[in-house]
Each structure stands twice: as structure tokens, then as C-alpha cells.
Length: 67
Image (cartoon, rainbow, N blue to C red):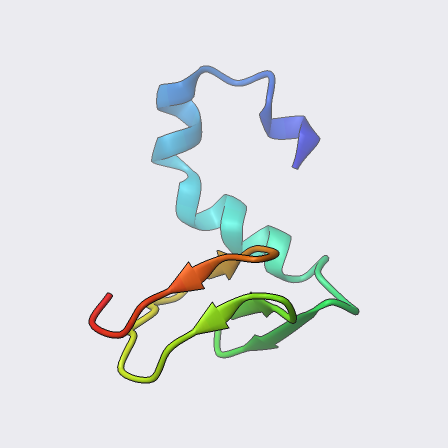
């Protein structure tokens, strides 16, 4: 993702979906990737939480039910 850090914020946000999709392909080991969503093994995602792809849930994140 470091190649995107030199872009202006408005350029990054306009390409955010593509950037996340590209990063999904590089995640391995500590993430479980399924249907365009990657969840780190230390993250907690409660039942009834809705995560729409593409998404990356990082280490120690908490996604509550109803989110």
C-alpha cells in the first residue's frame, strides 16, 4: 500500500475500493479472507455485524453486533 501514500487524499478516496481489493490479495497468515472481506485472527466480529466487501478488519479491532 505504500505506493498509494504519495497520492493526494481525494485521489486515494476515489480509488479506495480498488486499493482495498488489491490489498486483499496480499494478506496471508494472520487474516482469514472470504468473499472480499479479510479479518485478522485477533479481531472480534460479533454475530449480526454486517461487513460489506471489500473490507479489511485489522488486528485487535472490534466490530459490534448491529454495526
